[in-house]
Length: 593
Image 1 (cartoon, rainbow, N blue to C red):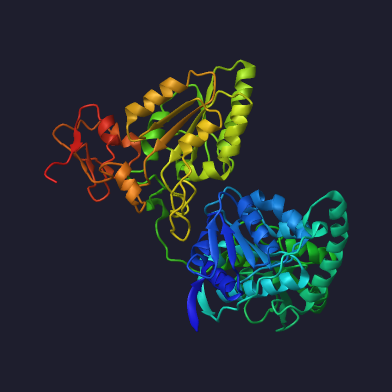
Image 2 (cartoon, rainbow, N blue to C red):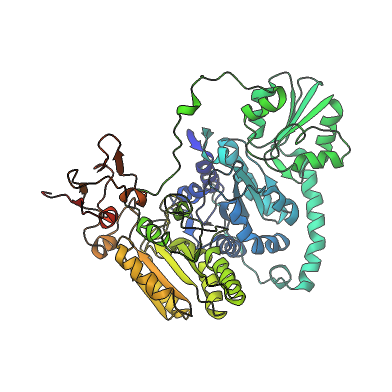
């Protein structure tokens, strides 16, 4: 049966057909939809973990217990999961195990552009790189078979275009795989130095066997169309290259890319007058070819970063691209992303950005948009959970240097569960006096409303215990905790006024649901009148001062001719932030509803 699937959907389908029983992940574009689709299969236990390290460890435990298991994450998530991953690569598996990394050439929604093929090389982890949705399914099934055959976790390296592009996939039936017996084996599973030294030797023998397999893998194959031009490519870059180089060139398509097939690459390069390497991000294949003694053209011809799309390749080779529709680019209005109308982060950042003599240490989430206009209320963003740790370090430096500046840290609820808890422990233990703000919008917002430990539901939408953030931070030793409605600007100011002078750490929890959230019964019960009203502007009272426009709400429109503001009724959800800002009370609630 053929289906039109994205790469993420096909990965999930491949896991299902391979007999996977356990899947764990943390949401992150472009990998999020993998677990969301796996969760649709009743045969697979699926879970959102608080972070990628926990997801990896959960999959490791399931593998040890004898079932096929997997963890999936975006590329920077592997940084978080690297600690258990590198050691598990030494140990080997019981049930087959796979880690899926979704890399992001071009950085559409990521803070860096790392190439996780380097993790496979460093950890001596065999790796597959699918080029389309069919290969996503096929490689997942193969990865579990090979994982058990060679006693090693496998890595499947995706990229954004493969994750989100759709192509036809031939779907099969699920293969039920028996649970393997668990037997105590300290030599294999207890990572003492004495044990790991023995396992380290075994890794080299395993990689030799995998190198032999790479030469005969069905995912590595040559297409010889002549000897003038040869192209070596992996993953989706193969299709990009085919579109540009055409049928006249010969191709070595690589899908099993760690270990690389040395003999196959030698034979291909020896036949060709000129060889190009097309790969995204680092010169991983290129450097391998150079070590074999071949003069190949890769990063000397193509950009060292970004996607290797046909336009990029064509411009690098010929200096031109295909003809485009001509238009006046000066008339294209820049539309940077903005917080949604009714976003509960707006009021907090509107007021926070007005504060002087503070440093605002930010984090990863929708609220990172506060770094730009009109809020200008974020001075740093490093990685998940870093806001509190970075803020602690900065505060300690300011205090010891005699600089009179307070640090305010900001992160979301899911990010707090991810790695913010440990950061707050560090702040308490080392006696910082930062003000730490946790934006509890009741969901993991930025990646598309995934559940988290504070939402009350699992990935399969089964009821789950709710981790109470207020009680948790108190248990960590925070004595000054305040929960506020972030739409109430007076409450925001009062909380900041109270906590900024303190000489010990404090936590402000802004609690209001994301405006796009599907509200639970608990939400409707807790938050009275949730987004059930509209605001309106009296044009007779409006003086055109545009103070309300400073809130950055996309529902507000300034009419240039009339020199007044109006509210787009379709966008407004009645959060009332603009109403509180207006100096002449021109904004009121609609009546007659």
